[in-house]
Length: 349
Image (cartoon, rainbow, N blue to C red; front, side, top):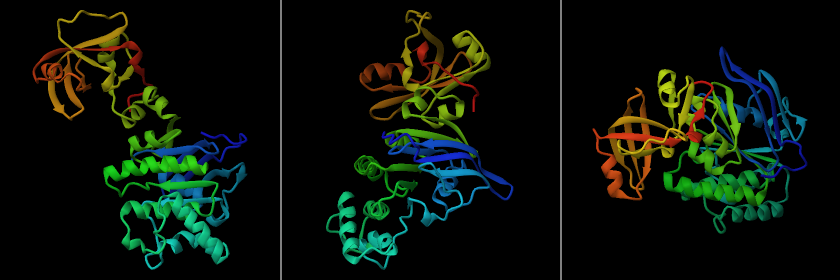
């Protein structure tokens, strides 16, 4: 992650946006560093797309400010901001060639035809579309159209690139391929990328840092590792990955004190009930296997614990016979995990 000269590429201060009685964005505070790949992650209605539109200038905030490179641009029109946006639907002109689509922003800015052609071809090369300039968007696959949209956004050399669910319309394998290419492209061009997504795996795979949003507010900001290993709320713990959340009497039975904690499914071992106890460094609870789903590289085991909480455990299928023995519904088992994997949560959801 580049940090430039220390000035944030984007600063949002007290940012609010209301649509009638609906508070879509509620006091957002964020700093995004120069050269950072930053994601706004959240469910539908969390306010993430509205924040992106406020940065782009497509919406005017009800309150607060938007600054780019230390300069307040809150009241500036979109074309007065050094920002471009890539949308999920690509927004390509069907009657224009690929090269004309890519060069459109340069044409609007008054660049010569020679400069338009040279920079458009260079931009297409950067997204691995050499030789595609003469085609029409309708002749391209979904992944190719997405690359054209990226080239069109980057050809004007913006300071910030905003991406609104850009891979959402692609199938799983193509989406994973495009994630790799998008990250490589960001490293090559070295500018700030801000991605809006509801896909936590996508956010973790691409981002230097992620802001998790809920109901118009930022719940937590951190690196992918920080959000996964040290979520501060049950919402973040459950939205960024999967977690077993335990509270109240169940928490007291398992960890010996009241409160709320979470533990990730892959941190838990499934043992025979006659396994030697180790409560000094570990948390333990007995239970009965309710279900087991074989998913190729791992098995998802559901256990109804004696503490009254249903746990999900992810077991890597390194030893199929051992995994099968512990995964039969109705089997009594002992769940064990190291205490360091107990994540204290400020609230359950």
